[in-house]
Length: 368
Image (cartoon, rainbow, N blue to C red):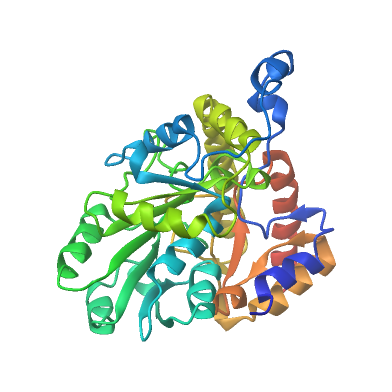
């Protein structure tokens, strides 16, 4: 497996003044999670013995509260959602099996199963239909060797959301197959509707619907590297047996910091949602001011958007010129096999985003 275009593009331009190519919200400091005067009380007595491989009882219970159909026994704590995805596919690996991945999606969702020997069948979502769930295309693609359908909702990079009824209809249609539906739901705590705290999840509503999540993207704690899988208790046990052979367990320190983060995290989530709302409005203004050079399927959740360049413009060239002339970094759609689009980070610091939009707007209006 080699580094992806996404990783190379972002790494080579990591010094950009305005980094709008990443996908998360602004990262938090430890003092925003645990007040300094309580730090010794909360962390000082922790030892460095092994943490339970499934994560502490308290953290699993806290994660389960985010789901409508989960209890602590349905949660496996992992080293980020990346490990949850890896451990799942290791647990499900068998000869001549395949997975179906709806794209665009983060590359690990198809690169990891491919590296483990799965045949990966990609179905590209359709811009013209608003990126709706293509039920019939999925059913035409699966066979008796299909072990998993991978859906990202809210989507990275588009920010679009699949309807719960459509996910349940897919699960019903797949009952004759030995096939799971994996929901990558890392952004579900960031709905753009201010009246909604989080998107509903079908995870564990049936034993064949599972979900990967993390504390990173929504709370602003990607470096904490704490994620989880929500699934039927039997599958969790199989994944736990595999996890014993990989990272074994996250540290007690990471476990406890994540617990404190999630216990008091609603204020952070609200702050992140407010910044995303303001940034989305500002970007909409730039789109409206640049003479129809950009269009999009408006995102409904998450911290990113995926606008399309009008007239078939090259997104890689656009991204490079934008970076060179304005020091504003976006991620070209080539990272998702979608030339002509680019990903922009709505979860950036609000003040920095506004300054970046001034530069982007001027760039768009100055270039044909």
